[in-house]
Amino acid sequence: MKQWAESLWRNKRLSLAEALEFPEPTKAAVVDTRTCRFPLPGAQLSVVDTFLQEAIKLRCSETLQTKKPRFTYPAEEQKPSAMEKWSLLGSTALVTGGTKGIGRGIVEEMGGLGAAIHTCSRNQSDLDASLQQWRSAGLKVTGSTCDVSSPADREKLMEEVKSTFDGKLNILVCNAGTGVVKPAVEQMAEDYKLVMSTNLDSSFHLSQLAHPLLKASGNGSIVLISSIGASIAVDGLSVYCASKGAVNQLTRSLACEWPRDNIRTNCVAPGSIKTPLLAMDDESLAMRRRRIPAGRIGEPEEVAALVAFLCMPGARYINGQVICADGGRTINGNI
Ligand SMILES: NC(=O)c1ccc[n+]([C@@H]2O[C@H](COP(=O)([O-])OP(=O)(O)OC[C@H]3O[C@@H](n4cnc5c(N)ncnc54)[C@H](OP(=O)(O)O)[C@@H]3O)[C@@H](O)[C@H]2O)c1
Image (cartoon, rainbow, N blue to C red; front, side):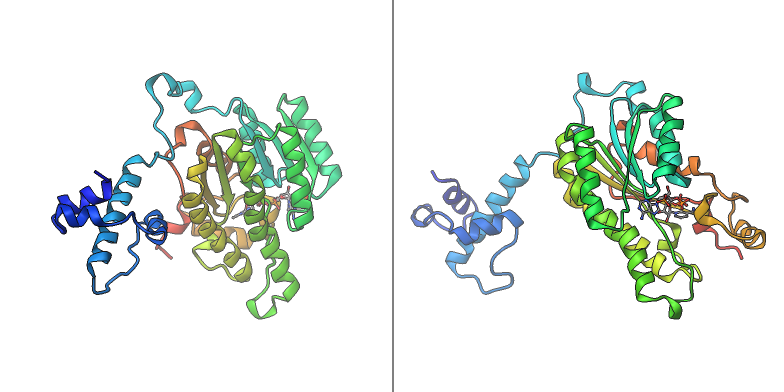
């Protein structure tokens, strides 16, 4: 007996004879089974509609039963050993903005854990000097100049990554970012464009461009770097904070769309970290410190350790999370 007819009969909505008389579900109904939505929600049901609903329920339950889990739990013999769980040995990574600050910390942390890394920045001489230092330290790092706010540069960068790593990339860290400190009324159109294109457009477009490479690796991980400014307001940083809020939400969207391609997406939101971007006078720094329960400004490697962890096999069930590395700044309700 045809499965849909059997379902109608078993559910006693129709007699066996009636059930057998019905034709196969229409194309429209089959299309709807993909989304598991009924074609006529809330409508008065005719017999044919009842039939279609039954057929759809059946198809949906079949789909659910046969759906493959996205992050498969490895069989005993394929489980990473304790060493492999906490290592990046054999992984390939693109880290943007690796010559200074947090990006540099990430390159060094991941390189030390065994990853081969490609990085970029806008300044050729800084990049050359950094590459030299990393090579002498025994790290596997290549690099190219790229302004991540430029779509053409982003495309060129991904071509370079593709040829460096033979079309397979395990890790993308979108770290390069910038801010323009001005009251909201003084932020100009060009300030807005610079901040949005550097922080948000680049995270989205680089993730899109990296998608085929991450998918080809069979085990991809994206980490977007946002900021605690995505969830608390910071004077003078309205556009910056908005761009980082969008990065947090982009994380959640990619985390739901791309697990089918074995790609996880997470986000790290640093608090105040000692880097050239945080350059400010001692009084302002002291004011910031007072609000941080840990009592100090963070170091780049303290953010880098979290980023590296999120890319390791040990973190394979962590997806779609925004995690702060802020010494407790965002949970502090004390003035
Ligand atoms: N430091 C903090 O307190 C803090 C707090 C929250 C969030 N963050 C976020 O953390 C990330 C890193 O910040 P950071 O403090 O390490 O910054 P940083 O010290 O200014 O370093 C930024 C790095 O990115 C590169 N870069 C900047 N703009 C670029 C562009 N358009 N294209 C390519 N490379 C670019 C810089 O090199 P070139 O200038 O030579 O290009 C440098 O290597 C940013 O997304 C930032 O928003 C930082």
